[in-house]
Image (tube, rainbow, N blue to C red; front, side, top):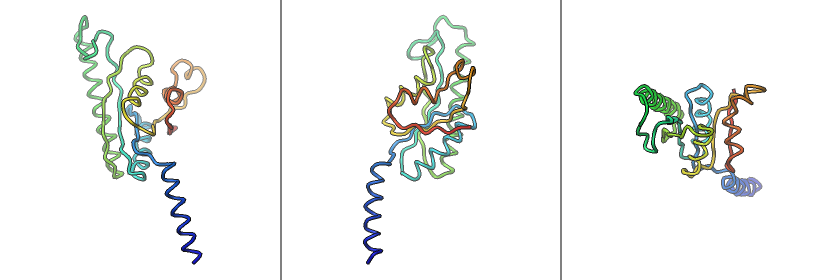
Length: 173
């Protein structure tokens, strides 16, 4: 009899907890580093647990001589070639990240995000993607810079955390 009451209480508690701690769409920015692939592993495990959608993104910055459709004008051919190479690298990175998620048993959607070169490219692009996609958790790596390097280079994870109300899981090196 005690077991039945406990079991009933425990079941009710788990349902309430599921409502509070349920993720439906997880967003993971991937840059090709081992740290970002580690973030993919963490996100895939969470997605598997909650049966959540997993979206992997990689950011490619446009050149200063492109329009909103990334058509080049007043730009040397080498600039266009570099952008094409960066785009292919982002696609390859996402393919590898998707394979990591697949090995864990989670399917994923991948997107290459073309970002403006203005302002803080990566952080802004991630935040704009969050607005466009109905994600409810962001999982990303952070290299944990300190001192002058942090001041000079910044920290994308910290920028994203400051700019969103969504939970952000930071996977550290």
